[in-house]
Amino acid sequence: MSIIKFNNNAPFVTIKDLGRFNSGKYGYSQSGALDLYSYCMANSLLNNPINAPVLEITHGNLKLLFQEKHTQISITGADVSPHTDNTPIKMWSNMIMKPNQELTLNSPKQGLRTYIGIKGSIEVNRILGSVSTSARDNLNHLIHKDINPYGAFMKGALLKVKTTSFASLKKIAPDKIPTYQNHWKVGVILRESYLSKSESYSLFNSQFKVSNHYNAMSIILEGKSIKINQKIISHGIPLGGIQIPPNGQPIILMHEHQTIGGYPVIGCVCKLDLQKCAQAKTGDTIIFYPKPLKQAQKEFLEFQEKWLMP
Image (tube, rainbow, N blue to C red; front, side):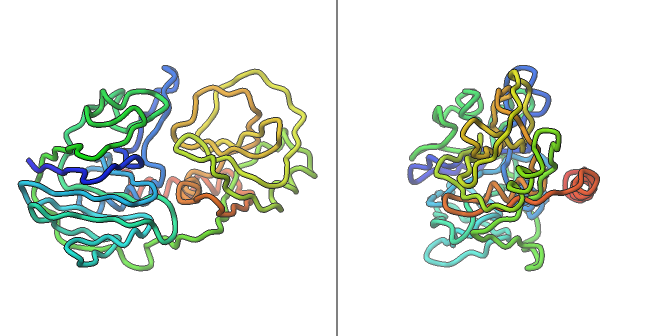
């Protein structure tokens, strides 16, 4: 058994796996890792099971103390200049942390979320088939006693890890590492009946800015107002859905979105482009472009066969 201690307050660190599927009928969100690619790579580097829990870190600024045993970890996602004992650690690789060694993550240079995979099994409870924390659903304390109501860890919290045999040391090839930026092109499957031609043109030919209202539930954008005349009753809403509230400012629904909403949904962000949204931060810009449904399905099936199939 390995023990990992949080050496500073970590209000933006949560436990994530692939998510809580088929739980919408109970009113619970899917939750799960927001950047699916970085999550998969964190586990792949360690030869972990597909659905192994990881730490999802938003904004970096984390200190972890590894106690008692050698522990193998991997770090992917936004570059947080990780280091230990003043020695830099390469992103997108795995490494072995020694007993009483502290890992420090700084603020990300680009992007927003970083992932730490841990070789073995984090000792946490599964609720409805998942260990993913979700502030909205208030399941966090049932998953781990040291998680606060907002789904995060505070200074002094402890993680117990049931360790297994180490994987070989390796790193992701440079051409497989995403480029993080301040400007994101995001594919959308449009619900054409909801928008006039002029409003569709505005959606795909405008630049939207990420506001300071974003979290694992949704991202509120700022830019040209999108007008829609549809009046609807509350209905089930999908992951990646783009809602248009009365003020016309688009809202992208992320993994912890509510299961029912009353704003019209004009389309969906493609599954693989949703992880771009997960790395977008306040002030970044987003441009939507139309993507055919069959193309989006093909791309995700290829990703699923490569990374999500046992």
